[in-house]
Amino acid sequence: MAEGTLKAEDIIREIKKAGIHFIVALPDRVTSHHLLKTIMRDPDFKVVQVCKEDEGISICSGLFAAGHRSLMMMQYTGLLDSVNSLRGVAMEGENPVCMLVGLLGKEPGVAPSQSKKYGVKIIEPVLDAMGIAHHWVEESGDTQKIVPAIEKAYADTRPMAVLVGREPR
Amino acid sequence: MMKRDECLKVFKRHRKDEIVVAVYMAAQEITHIMPSNLNYTFTGAMGQGSSHALGLALGRPDKRVVVFDGDGSLLMNLGTLVTIANAAPKNYLHCLCENGTYETNGAVPIPRAGEIRFVDMAKAAGYRKTYEIASLEDWDRQLPTLLKEDGPIFVDLKMEPGELYPEDFRRLYSIEYRDKFRRALQNS
Image (cartoon, rainbow over all chains, first blue to last red; front, side):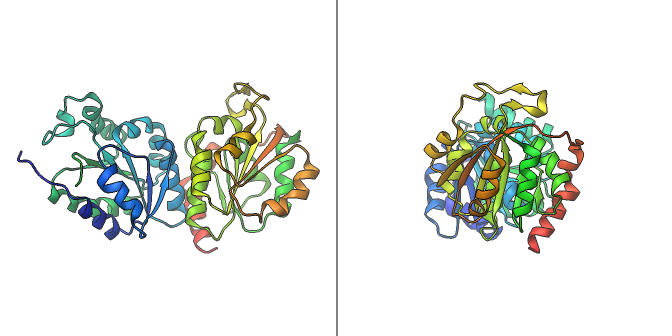
C-alpha cells in the first residue's frame, strides 16, 4: 500500500460533524501530539482527562444518560485494560461509547489483524468476540467512516471503535 | 457508626430533585427506600459509580449529583479521585459508604479495613471540601450544606450494614429503567 496521509484536522472536522463536544481522554502515542493536543486547545471541545481508561467508558455513559454525545480517546492498550467495563457498561449496559483508539506499533499499510505486534493483532478479534463494531482509519479517505460509525452507535445505543492505524498529522 | 439504610432514610428527607447514583448494596436499598426516576444504578462494572456520576454531573451542571459509593468499589478505581478533582464539577457530592467490607461479595474485609484515610486521599487529590461523618445527627445537620456547597465534595460516611433488603440485580441494571432515567432527566 502506498504511503498515505491522515490529517488531524479532517478527524476533528468529522468529530464535530457528529455533534460531539465532550472528549474523554488518556493520551495515546499515536494521536496525542497532533490530535489530542489540538483538541485540548479548541474551545468547541470540553476535554475530560482520566487516570485510567475504564473510567472513561463510564464517564461517556453518564454523559449519554445526561443527553450528550462524547468520544473516548485512548491507546489500544487502554482498550484491552477496559474489557470488563466494555462488557458491563458499554455492551450489557447498552451505552453508545464511541472510542478513537490508536494502534501503537502497527506497521504502515498492514491490517491490524495481520500485525506482527501481538496486542495490535488481537484487537479486532477481541472486539469481534465482544460484538463491538470497529472501523480501521489509516488513509485520508478513511475519515469518511467516522460520522456514519458514530451515528450508528447512537442509533443502536451500542459502542464502537475507530482504530487509528497511523499518526495523524 | 451509622446503619446505611438509616443514613439513606435521612437523606431522603432532604432530597429534592438531585440525581442519586448508587452502587451495590446502597443501590439495592435506594430502590426500596427512595424510589425515583432520578436514581441511577446502571453502573455495570465494579468501581465505576463515581465515573458514571462524573459524566452526569458534567452533562447536567444545573443538577446536583450525589453518588453513594462503596469503599471496596472506590479502591478499584482510586484514580477517579484525581479525575473528578481535575474536572472540578461544582455540583458533585461524593459520599463513601465505608463499612470496611466487600459487602456484596460475602462481606470479606477490604485490605487495611478501618486503617485507610479516605478523606486524606480525596483532599490530596484536590477535592474542594472533605468530611467524615459517623452519626446520623451530624449527617442530618450537615446535609443541607452538603447539598448546596460548591463541590466536588467528599464525605466519608462511617457505616455498618442495616436491615436486609431484597436484592434485584436485574432491576439495578435494567435498560428499561435506565431509559426512564434518561427521559426523567431530560424533563427535569
